[in-house]
Structures are given as C-alpha cells and as structure tokens.
Length: 171
Image (cartoon, rainbow, N blue to C red):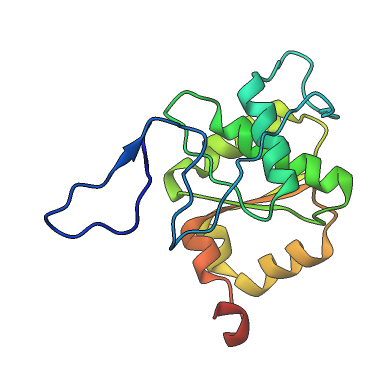
C-alpha cells in the first residue's frame, strides 16, 4: 500500500509516494500522525456462542470500535463483518458505553443480520426493525426502542430514514 507524502500535486506533477504502509510522512499542510496499534489480548466476549472463535482481526476491530468514536470496517466479502458488527455492539453495551446500540444495515440484509446476531449471541435480546414494521407505525416502534431493555436494535436503512428526528439532530 502506498500513501501520499507531499502536498497537493499540480495537474502535471505526479505525487511522490512512500512505501511505508503504516505512516504518512508529515508535510507543511498535514500535521504528523501516529498510527494506533490496538491489541485485543484484554478483550473478553461475554455471551458469545461457544462454537464461535473470533479471528484476531475481528477482535482488533472490536478494540478499535470500543476505543474510538468511529471506525471503518473496510473488509472484503467473507471476512466476518456481521460478527464484527455484533461484537462491538454487545461489548459497548456490556461496558456501559452504549445503552442500546443500533445497527443499521441495507434493506436486503436485515433478516440475515438478525439471524447471525441471534446465532452469535443466543441469550441477547434484539429488536429487529423491518421496513414494513416501522412504516406501519413509526411511533410505536420508536417507543419500543426507547422503553424496551434491548441488547441491540437492528434496523434497515429505509426504516432508519423513516424514523422522525428533530431538525437539530439531523444537522
């Protein structure tokens, strides 16, 4: 992997590249950055099904997701992203970092995601918001989200977009 190591190039100038994949050389326009290395040795996965053994990259992502306000999971198909979504949600709930984690997934993946969450955490309580369910009575669904003791809420993109929010929150 290569990273840009110079300021913004002109149209005719080819950017200088560095072969260091873990760091970008600081320039006049960019402050120096240090890459964070997260180890997952300290993580425990309470409630995870005993048959499932997470890969190291999955546990490292859980550590990153718990320690930072946002984390991108840019992995290819088959890398275990559904488990990577479930484990941080349940870990943050257990640690008190999130009261009711909400996982928003594409409409066509809602049933698969809910099924895999239930397989991974069989004792957990999940509320699944299908687009048709939420569209029928949004206020009732939002009330169930607010008043229920859910370990996580799994909702489709269209159902999430249909939920009312205040204008200040939306901005």
